[in-house]
Figure 1: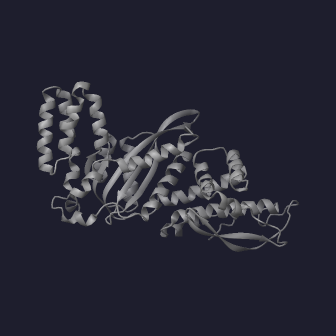
Figure 2 (figure 1 turned 90 degrees about the horizontal axis):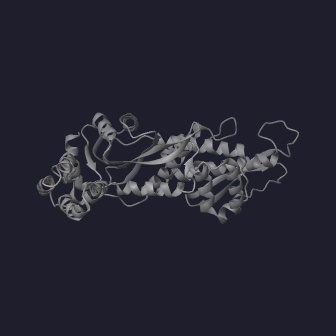
Figure 3 (figure 1 turned 45 degrees about the horizontal axis):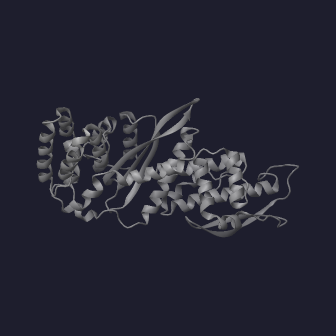
Length: 398
């Protein structure tokens, strides 16, 4: 693994990691290697090539040691001193609490925990105390790796994209503000899931979504068939500019939730049942017929609500242009909601991020973890069926 002249892991060493399937394993290896180096520097009392009266010895190469982690089997270089007195506490402590140690190293920086507290926690978990300046060095290493992952090249074609955002409290210039963590999940032509993009923005406006979609284009995406998301004017405007041939599917879960807020309690159950009948129709033609009947029925009771449903209709049934076996997974954002639910669980104790960078760090690391897990999962959708659907929108995209 290449090193910069400063003795820290350099940005240039990150590139080859992107060619590996087990990216998370390499990231954890980098962080643990940095822990070893900082522990050894503390033992010697001086950094490499540093002249110091407090120096207790000199480096004498290194030997390899393997460590089994939740991310995979990692090979580390353990430094030697000339007197042979250095003995790392990392391995014994890590083996006893592997999962907790991994989370402490990767998550605690992300959760904005004070560097002094991180030092105390890592010492309690594995017997290695990481000091304040060392924590900063490790955070830089982590940020570099996550930035490389966020900027990795993407495939040209993703039939389906899921877009969703979750708001978090973030300190900014002495105030606590709400910022949106946006995630983009893609289903590739092989039917596998990939988390393609993560970013943290002030609002879900057109400019923010334009930046998000332009980033996807810059990294290689040329064609998208269907985008599943919520009713954000900024999302739709940016989508029309960057992926004009892609269809737009509204999340059913949120539509039915919004409907419940708009309908009087005495009509709520019947309205919901009628709308679900349209959404669950066996064909698009049948779905459109039932939906028009629903709109007519609603118009007799609430013209404004009928207008809302009329405007919404094309985005409610867009998924029906694709293979029927895909419909259940295309008509809602539930999969991405589960990712956001896990994010919220992780930050519940924190409540407020100290800055935007710490929020982006956590979102990126968790997204990368999900992405890593999905690479070994069975395929999410059978994409061979896509080519057999005569009405599939992708035929107009090429």
